[in-house]
Length: 85
Image (spheres, rainbow, N blue to C red):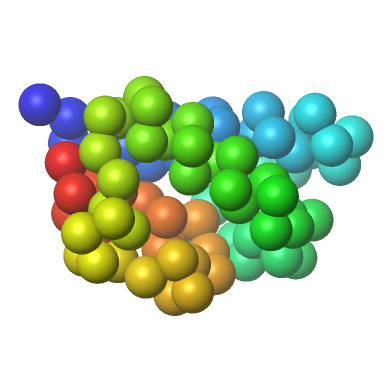
């Protein structure tokens, strides 16, 4: 079973990959980082959700445990997926 640290590492890795693919400046990521300020757009957020759903085999937004509209920071993503696994 995955713990919160495992989920955080996976989320951070996936976000870093998406930022690199979009040719955005790599940065040291932390839980308080706002996704929009990092350069995320709605398509990147959708891709992140698809990748995390696939990797973790869970969708926290399908059961309404979390609302996608409440996702603003890396920490929000980690909390949503940690609660679902």
